[in-house]
Length: 234
Ligand SMILES: C[S@@+](CC[C@H](N)C(=O)[O-])C[C@H]1O[C@@H](n2cnc3c(N)ncnc32)[C@H](O)[C@@H]1O
Image 1: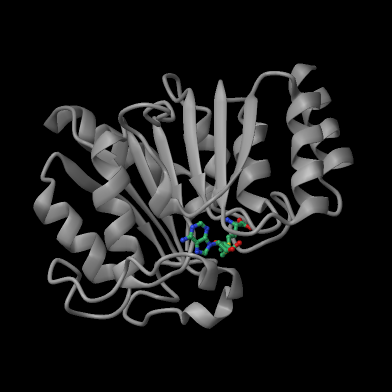
Image 2: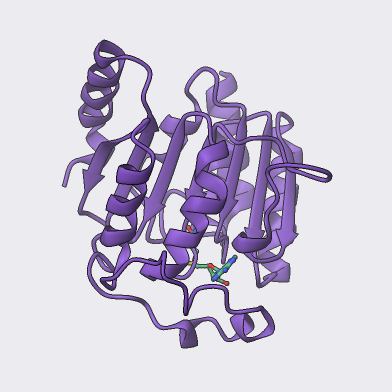
């Protein structure tokens, strides 16, 4: 009954948000990861019109921090109303760059159990995000558009608001030597062997799930579970 009520709330408040029925993250089953026991704090980078945000809210986590350089007023308002109606989640939209998020020290956000990265789909950007935020994440790092931009960087001209931010993604020797997201993912897995590739799928522009390793048995179980999700078949 509670689930039916929640579904109705999501449908009423999310329209015309693209929610689970639209948007490029459609069919990726993000809510299933967010619903897992122990996933209480979620940090989302890249909100736009809020498909992924609505999917996370539908899982009713304790806290959801959503970060974007651009605030799409009508959409963020709706997401705030949706969060209030669902009644379980402390939701906060932060207009800033993912590269300005603090997970340590004064004013830090809580260490996320799940980090979702869906900003500028370029190797240098992802590399910076992973090394800044990745080590503080407790369980999952989820990346979108990993098929579309596997070996090719998205151009920064897609996001005019990026001009207002310092470019921290060029001219450094620790950036991936190949374009695209995949080199950045591999570099991260090599540098942080406590993380493993739990799922890679190719539908809807591609999704990658990285998971912090617990034990060989639990990691294998996690891989199996992720693959049984029909929403993630390709
Ligand atoms: C692909 S869209 C996100 C889509 C969204 N996750 C969804 O499911 O609908 C990318 C978003 O990332 C934002 N963005 C680009 N670079 C960013 C950065 N460095 N920090 C935060 N947001 C950024 C853009 O403004 C844009 O809204």
